[in-house]
Image (cartoon, rainbow, N blue to C red; front, side):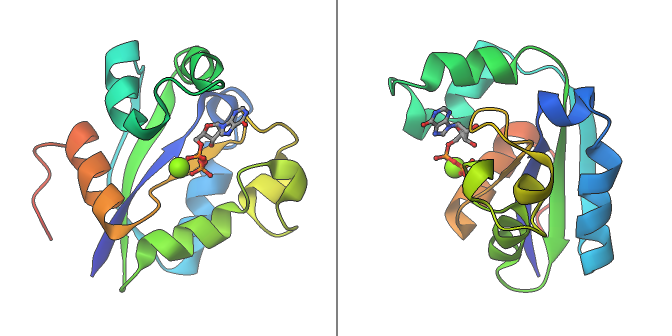
Length: 138
Ligand code: IDP
Ligand code: MG
């Protein structure tokens, strides 16, 4: 089994799309093993988005990600579940994301792109430990 971190971003919560997004993963056959609605502050975002600290879009990203609650979840499935989730999310810029993906179906803005998914097995482990440090290893 493999686990990955998913965040339904503030725009998804504001627009009432959390059920739609999580429902897609469930209907695919993935399982939710942890989930909580949370407010993310600068410090936790700096840990989560460590690779992006200092980039041109970073301040906008933090402002967006902290403007309202997010749904943080750990999703479990077969090998390379992180990759399946990324395919279902679509390209980072929703204007380039294929129809049938979450970003392709619901988004138009690169910052407000609805959903986060870990980009590797290592990222998934690192990110899940930030948000759910007490979650038992699979
Ligand atoms: P990802 O979420 O598809 O993995 P990353 O490159 O890791 O994309 O970027 C993290 C997040 O930062 C994106 O989901 C998006 O919200 C935001 N972002 C990335 N690139 C840009 C940009 O060029 N302008 C504005 N926001 C961006
Ligand atoms: Mg990323």
